[in-house]
Length: 158
Image 1 (cartoon, rainbow, N blue to C red):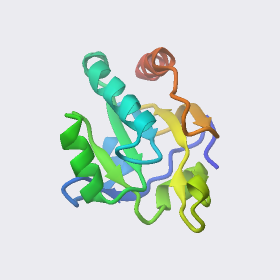
Image 2: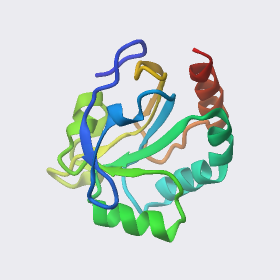
Image 3: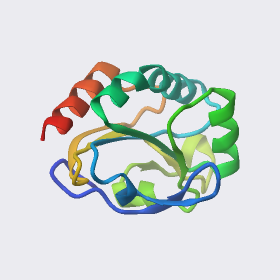
Image 4: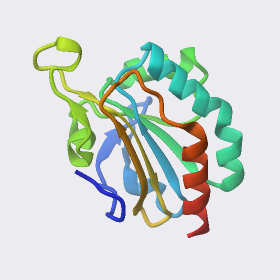
């Protein structure tokens, strides 16, 4: 499990165009990583759209925002297009990231063998050190968006 002060795991995922992306590719700028349980679900749609609507604030701070789910790149692409998401969505279909970060639900939603991400937020500094962590056991709970923005601003100042 990743804790504040530790280096973010440098997992390799694929984006909505099926291009491999390592977490280290965001190095040099603070980064907000948003783990979400599933594309096209109510709370995940609200969360990604809230971040979409607040992206100008993050752009002004020169902070990366990236979403990660266990959905395949095809579902993430459809989700991104349907909701005009204007930041990268990465597919963790092998569950490498959720396991490396230690934030996952086994048998999610009562489905035996289905592992999904917990809703989680990590704010990384420009060197990929975790500066803020929030993980919810309840997939229906959204993070506090003002707290994320404040923590991203703090990470920028480091």
